[in-house]
Amino acid sequence: SSSGLVVSFGEMLIDFVPTASGVSLAEAPGFLKAPGGAPANVAIAVTRLGGKSAFIGKLGDDEFGHMLAGILKQYGVIAEGINFDQGARTALAFVTLRADGEREFMFYRNPSADMLLKPEELNLELIRSAKVFHYGSISLIVQPCRSAHLMAMQVARDAGALLSYDPNLRLALWPSVEEAREQIMSIWDKADLIKVSDEELKFLTGSDEIDDASAMSLLHPNLKLLLVTLGEKGCRYYTKNFHGHVEAFHVTAVDTTGAGDSFVGAFLCKIADDRSLIEEEVRLREAIKYANVCGAITTTKKGAIPALPSHSEVLSLMKG
Ligand code: ADP
Image 1 (cartoon, protein in one colour):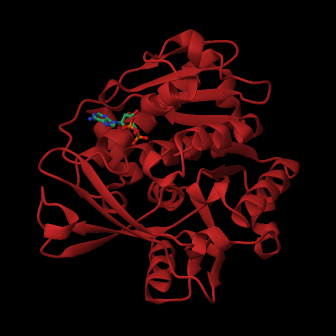
Image 2 (cartoon, rainbow, N blue to C red):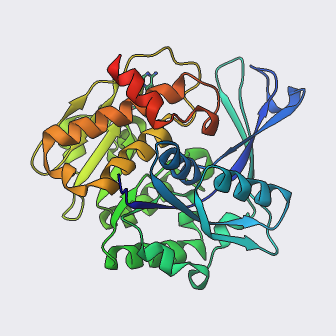
Image 3 (cartoon, rainbow, N blue to C red):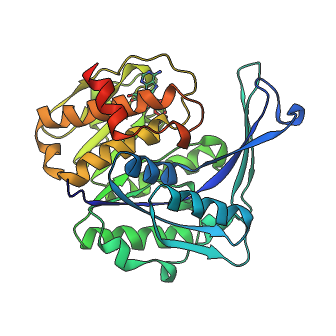
């Protein structure tokens, strides 16, 4: 099929994951490098499924930055929107799930290159060719990257792209909870389509339960579709005309890292082909089902990028 271009804007970084499980960062005997960053994962999810994508963002002009750009290219992601910062370094994260069940993080972001993309460095031609423009980086809160995001969003919208937003709330990364909520809500009304997790929805609405009324209260005149992912319970969807639930695809999960990004990439692939599917519930449910299967497959393998499925893997699972 002649699929439309998905342009994904945001950060790409390296997660250093301990080679032993259940250890604290200080106890780790060594680390494996796991490339990631939600917007980059989404771009790769799209090409794995046979779609077309480009990544926009800034990396350090260092060993890690060039390694990450190489990975994007290796997966067929268009790399013409990548800039290299001459001063700041590529973002790095050290992440572990300790034996006590707590996650422990440490970030190198003070500031890292991804936060320093300037509006005048944007590849506008690439952004104008997007059918879907996706964003959802933590770098969206800091200057100059915030201005670059706002400009890119406007340019994409003017060129007729559908705007897709995933807040990717990682509370540990925000200066404060209030600031996180405020910043996210300040750009909430710019998107045509938003994906949040159930936890994020609870945080944004301030309620303990997700009920349809509180989800619907987040719809705004621009927003055509709100998707709420529920892990092993699948996904809920809300439009002005209908809402409902699509069950998850049953699998035995081993590592849920990247499931949300896989889900988003899959859904955007479908939307980039035919945006009218948002308006018809039957076809919307089909697209969500496809995205649920992609998310589910991603949980059956370790890591994010190595666990993203190909289109044929998805089809063979859907056939049963
Ligand atoms: P996020 O990573 O953003 O928190 P979720 O964990 O809700 O997102 O996962 C996104 C999607 O991936 C879910 O809507 C679901 O379709 C699929 N998924 C995630 N976890 C599982 C699981 N344990 N079993 C089956 N599907 C899953």
